[in-house]
Length: 54
Image (cartoon, rainbow, N blue to C red; front, side, top):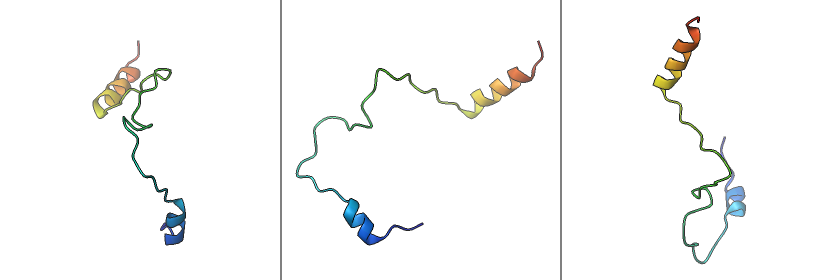
């Protein structure tokens, strides 16, 4: 899928000066819990422990 050059030109925003500090995406939101990163090892250990009958 390719974007038309006219659409990109329309969506471009010009600013005179960048704001100081971290961007909105980089600021932490204290009201939201952090997401846990699931690695291959933790995923496989969860599958292994779930498969063992108690």
